[in-house]
Image 1: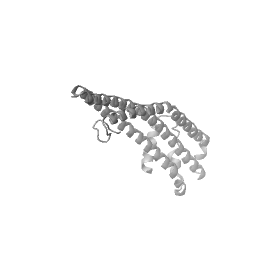
Image 2: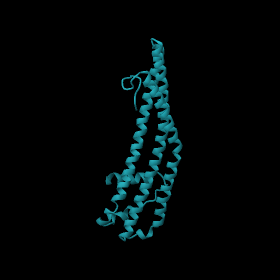
Image 3: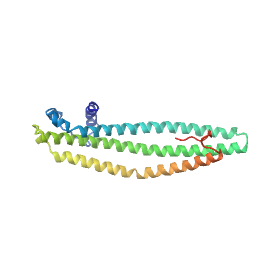
Amino acid sequence: MKRIVLLTLPLLAACGPRYGMRVPDSLEKKLPYEARIELLEAENDLALAIDKVDEADNEIGRARDNIRRARSRQEAAEDEVDRAPDEVSREVAKLAIAEAEARVEYLRARQRLNVGLREVEELALRCAFAKFELARLTVARKAKVEGSERLDQKEYEEQVSECEAEVKEERAELAEDEKEEKAAREAWEAKKSALAKKTFDARASPYVENL
């Protein structure tokens, strides 16, 4: 885990100046073993933040695949209308179209939320990076490592505070996307339920599929 964190630090610092203030590596190299142990919690938090960004990316990929499949189902349902042998079959096909359209709208709303969540997690990762740097400086000062006294700890603390405040603000801004995602899901669930009732049993119906 530590290797992953150490490899990630230069990449984070290179992404831009925002919350990218670092403690010189030379200071950490001077730390005694006992002092390095105190960095484990901050390292774990940073690794966890990296995992959350990866999972957010994976969720976007899964949603993209689901949207592609939902569009295919919608096209198949539209074809069924013309091929329906009777009025009942035609009505089922129309309900399947409505369900597929609602599914696509829900998945698009979900994807908008996914993208917003990924942006928040990316910012949260920068906060974890800032907290890790603060921990490095705190430990270096505690161990009285030469050169650590020249760094302003208050600036590192402010970096963390400002970043965490921005994360909180961005999470709050997702409220509208969350509301739209919930409404779209409820609309899809209603269409799915109507289709299931028409086909008697959702589990046996070839038209009804859960995500």
